[in-house]
Image (cartoon, rainbow, N blue to C red; front, side, top):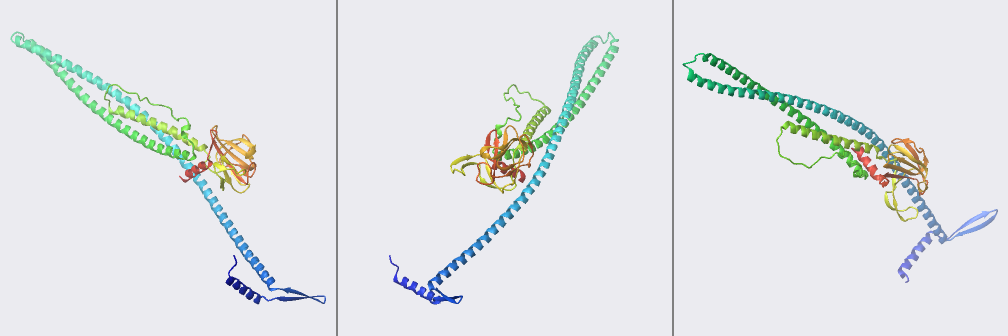
Length: 440
């Protein structure tokens, strides 16, 4: 398809105008008396101007691109500097949290000792109450004996009165005997009244002791309930942190295997409130003991978990799980976390343990393996240099190697693995749980 004649004519008009401003030129060059002529046509001049325009445009774009790239590098360095400052601040917060945690632990242990002392006092008061109850029983027995004696005397008095009616006119000597019997009867009545008064005073004393004992039990029970609530809150916080790592707490043995027998029955026999209070206090103490055992178990578990990053600054180059292999581009399982950073960056141990492997291991390149226990291990692969030996004890934040590119790798990075009972875990979840600990 041919272009329209108008377009062709317009193009020719522009060309004529350009050629008019750039006419054919001749350059005279004189050398040793010889004159040479260099002819520059309009087409050559247009081509030269076009080439100069392209060179100027490219130079301008290159300068702008270089300046933009320098600005990006400066901004990234500023972000890295801010991230380092934030990380050092988090380390200080972790130290403060550990000190507060130790203080809470000491308070719990002192409160537990105080509760044991109160329980011993409670048992002593119970023994005293039993002794008072025994004395009251003896008093009641004496009072019953007086009553029986009074009834016997009443019968004797009745017989004597009948005999007096029959023999009043015959035997005046019986008046002396009757007076003696009446005196004995008055004396028995006085003893009975005294026994009743002593029994009433004893019952009041027992009632006061029971009230004081009940108040003491209520105070003990309230204190233990508050301790149970605080311990349960701390346990729930620990459990939430462990769940963030992906570890299943059901995989661990129970911290307290004591079970209660729920098979019950029999007749109803009412008991005193003090006995009920003692049973309730004993149950609360058993619950507190269970919770303290669980709290200690979770505290020891948290102390062995790798909750901080092995690098001070990094970016994720490959996540945990399914991925396309960076070398053969086939789908594969990636049981670690690839963390990119500058080559020869320091690699730190995020937890305590013993170096169970240190050296070259095929696809891992230079690798360090730290065993924290029989169940937990951490691995650090693709290192440039190893700074620890097999069998060496390492502490938290101890430098164990330098980041590199050894083994099966496409660039400088750290291959970081966490194994729990031989099963690979996602290190990203442990680092996330550690941020939750530092935040709270």
